[in-house]
Amino acid sequence: MIRFEYFEPATLAEAVALLGRCDGNAAVLAGGTDLLVEIREHIRRPAYVVNIKQIPGMEELSYDAARGLRFGALVTSRAIELSPVVQEKYPGLAQAVRELGSIQVRHRATVVGNICRASPSADTLPPLIADGAAARIYGPAGERVVALEEFFTGPGRTVLKTDELVTEITVPPPPPRTGKIYIKHGRRKAMELATVGVAVSLTLAGDSCGEVRIVLGAVAPTPIRARQAEALLRGQVVAADRIASAAQAAMAEARPIGNVRASAEYRREMAEVLTRRALEQALEAAR
Amino acid sequence: MKELVRVTINGEARELAVAPYRSLLDVLRNEAGLTGTKKGCDVGDCGACTVLLDGDPVNACLVLGVEVKGRRITTIEGLQPAPDRLHPLQENFIKYGGAQCGFCTPGVIMMAKALLDENPDPTEAEIRFGLAGNICRCTGYTKIVEAIQATARQLGGGKRGA
Image (tube, rainbow over all chains, first blue to last red; front, side, top):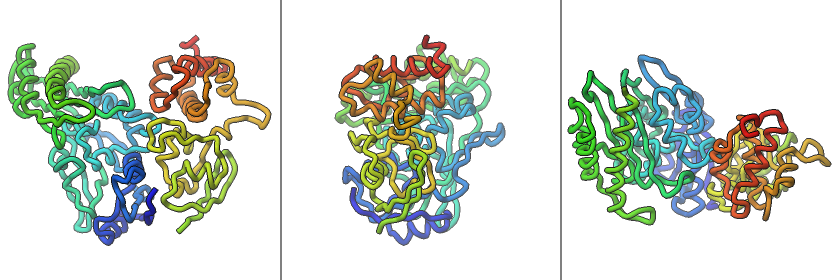
């Protein structure tokens, strides 16, 4: 492994001051399951590695009915996977972490790390965006909160400055009669990156569809909302033909690349198939 | 610049001088002299380097040696209850043919230990889900699953798998 200098700041203020001094040559280490691989494979060559795991106050996961779910930057994907409240209230997110890497990886990998790494195929991003999650960001100028939907600017790129850290994710409580689904498509069941991932959060209002969010992963430089598909459903009585039209609209909104995992054409078609399945399942769960 | 890392490995307090860019896997195999933990892919895909960190299974290749200060690590060498006695998992891997070439075996057994600690009575599906991060090219997993089921029965769980 390349030689880097290693720091363990004890506070957030110390960490961001250090990151500022490193001037873009530092890598933040939380779980390390992506970073250490990228260093070993010479994809990243940081001069400094800043381990944030000694900073207190970022290990909590909590839920209350008014404010929803909150979890800190050091909460592992395994802790999210095993959380009864996540399984009950945020089944899309629960499904996504279940399919992220292996149990060994999930004991180290943090969900905030999955977010900050900003891979277009990252499993936790579509369900969190569908759930309306927001990131709390700490920097030298203080704190700011950014909706996760606005957080990603490209593959591996986010709105984070080099001296800012995401400290916490907040997710609003699900309204009654809401179905949340994440479907990951890959070439095999485990230890796989998503070829296409689709998350849906759908709330029923009477017999009609109320608020609905459809988020596609791995079919664009960042996860994207399928807004035209959503618009076809909102306020409508959802039947099979409506779902089929929305799934076709989602396919039209996907703009995938072709790579070693799948061709662009295949990804587009799977975006339609998975959107249809996810809407059917979300509708069923909402009833 | 090396740091002094105080860590408990297999119940024994150790002090190791560790460079910050060295993985826990390299530290265990070289500085600590424990070569039972294997290096397969070195990027977290194969599971051959699985060890327990404060009881949780992790890939030692994806942990820095300097990150384990004050922590408790269990490797395959720490599983035996006594020098001349094997752990039931080790006995059953022999009895059921769960090890062939043996390279994945220390990692598989450590993962199986973590699995049974958390869930003493796993179904076959739960065992296979738990082993998703451990790659074995020899056994086809059937004999591994049988060895783990037999251990669960022997240790008092394993009612569903019986």
